[in-house]
Image (cartoon, rainbow, N blue to C red):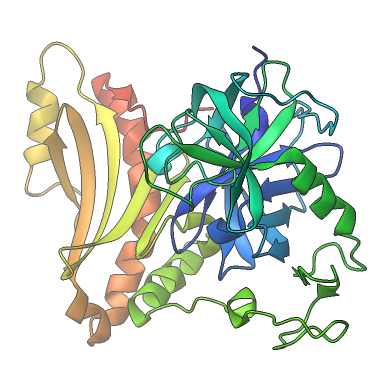
Length: 359
């Protein structure tokens, strides 16, 4: 089977994550609408841990299809073929590509159980391939790399049952997407196919109801706004760091940075740095345990053979007179983590962790 990994992207938002794929011939990323609902800008992560900003430009809630464009589209991307004449039959092998449960890129194999399963007035492809949350929006391909369907996991949580939006439905959505401004957000009226750019209760062309959720934008909590202000202070676009509710994840140099709420009480920023070296650890342990080390207010520690750097404050403190100090300290942690990631490799012969981004 051909390698299509460079055309498959993890999508992360302030609500969670899903999967998308790039159609080179159309300069569009495709995903499910429910993956990007409430967002107009999202992060796209490739297999090399690079993040690019994506603009949601098309949404059809009824078909659960959304399109995304980027001003920095991927290069050297394999071609996923769209062919409405591709044979689709029961017991045919298919491959589901995606990021189940937000885990690393995965391919699962299955067969088509029913090519035209009718559910709630719409036709879906049914398969026995494993489909889980996080797979949503990814492609179902045959061995030749032809698109069979767009995975959707919103229909069922049953074992050994997965569903996909047939390729013919996607082709129709692409044909209906004829925007004047290719980077503007558009909502499609599922009745007459009119593209809407402003919120309305009814389609001005046919009178069809337009769900208000299509134009809703998820707001940030006061806590989330504080964290994203800190991200901007360090020169980071916060949209690219969003990885779920009250959770942010990104790389600073080689170091992976995670910021999240712990037990509803603490703001925690942490980075899994290096793997401990084999051999004598005495000098390294002396450095890590030194109470006078030059890394305060951050804490170094060891867990599961990894060195970690962490920063923790009570949530109440970010709304106190300590706010500005905490924001400044939080904004400096990524660079400190990146510096130490390299320091431990060069000084103590440690290895980079699997989470590290090493070019």
